Image 1 (cartoon, one colour):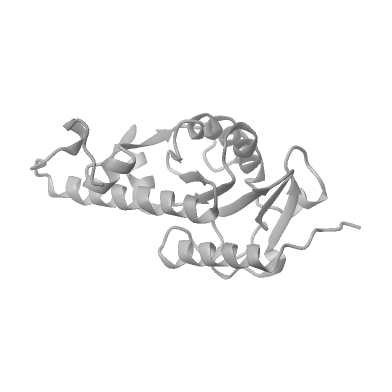
Image 2: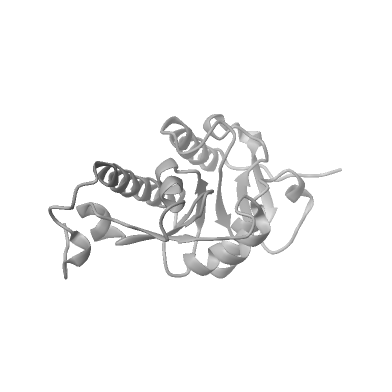
Length: 208
C-alpha cells in the first residue's frame, strides 16, 4: 500500500494560485505543464493528469529528490526533469509551461533576442535548445539543467519553457517575462519594418 505525505495548506495555496494564473493567461491548456518546489530532500510536484488551473490538495505529490519511490508513479511525467534541475542548479522552484509565443519563435530562431526595453534590461535573450524527443523527460532532463545553470529559463524547441526560481512566484515572473518579450518580438517581426531603436546594440543600458 502506498503512503503519501500531506502537503501544508499554505504550500497548496501557492500552487493553486500559480497554476490558475498559467492556465487563465494561456500559458498552458487545462492539463498541460507542471510546477514544483524543492523541500529539503523532497520534491512537491503536480500530480500526473491533474488540472493545472484547478488544483486540489490531493493533486500535489511529495516525491524523493534523488531516487524513484512509490509517489513517482503518480507524479508528473516530467518529474525526472525537475529532479535533475534541483540536483544540478540552485533552483528551489520550477515551472514548465507551453508559452505560445516562445514556442512559435523557437521554431524559426536559435535564440530569442529581447527587443523591448524591459526584456533586454532583465534578460537580454531567451535561450533555445533542441532535444531528440522534446516532450519526453529523458532527454530534457539531460539538456535543460545545463542551461539553467546560467539562465533563469530555457525554451525547448517546439515544446515549451522551463524556468527556475527561489519560489514559485519567482519562476512565474520569469515565465511571464519571457513570454512578454517573445510576444513583442513576434508582433514586431510581423510588421516587417526595421527597428527604430535596437536595444541589443546599446551598452550599459538599464531601465532602472
